Image 1 (cartoon, rainbow, N blue to C red):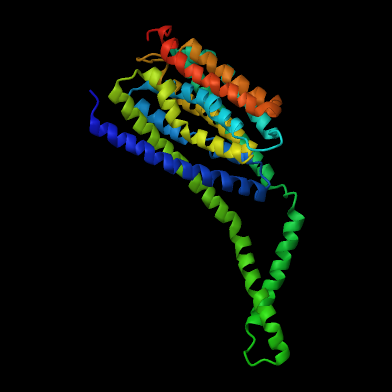
Image 2: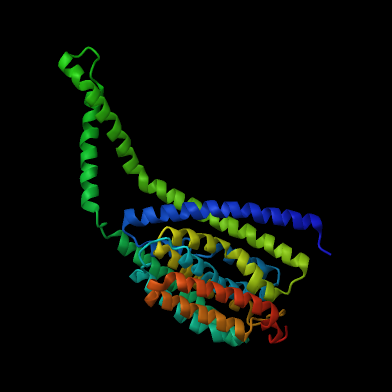
Length: 378
């Protein structure tokens, strides 16, 4: 029988973490878009290493491995990857609040295709959980993750060396600000006992002298300010996801739900709530690059680093069962749908989002009623 005090505490923790999650998603989206515009780096690349990096998922995976709950870890990885596309990406498409069709940039297309290739490689390997195959595949996946991070860093370095399109306008504004600022000390040092001609200029001088100083200070601090808030939002998202996952794990233990089913459905829903919040906010505000980075980056992180660690640690020894063919098929099909949408489906984004969300609801229903009846050993 479930402990009422434990249930009450973890439900309260879950709800409190949702508020932290909302705060983090809001700050992250706003300031990522500003930083991307200021530095001329595509917001897709920035999002890949921030919201697209599933650090809270990695924490959950390591915790599961430490507690010998390997089936829970791999179930969470597969379920989260499915939820990121069918649950989070679909919501971003549905809440896209723009009159014009959503447009995906070149970076979005490239990394969506990378995700499809990675998923195609992982899907059959995840099913055949044998020692030699998993050890070799785990090493390949971690090496792939290293190359992936390097490619994103290289893309960011290229972007940071490219001047923004409106750099001329910004530079001219900066020059005018500097000129006025340099003159303000002279104006400020004027004595009250100046001539009437100078007095007539004092209100103008004071007005000009004060405003540019504030503008100059804002120009120097603006990028640092937005970067600080970007990472503040990112840390809030990670912290909220970590709290949500632990609360959900405790609740599952109290209700005695099987590891694979709980990992694929319940834990994955809890740990991907940050992605759903980011997807809704980014889609609503028209930031297609962040929406794609949130999905592609999250799944690449899950299916390379997180799954690679599980494969190396377990060598295929999953005492509480593995994911089945149906779940892995849904994983690959969702990645295919995601890539196709990014490449050719921008004009029908809301319709596609609705179809994907319905497919996710159907998947959850089948997971409880059908899939685990045909699971090997479950």
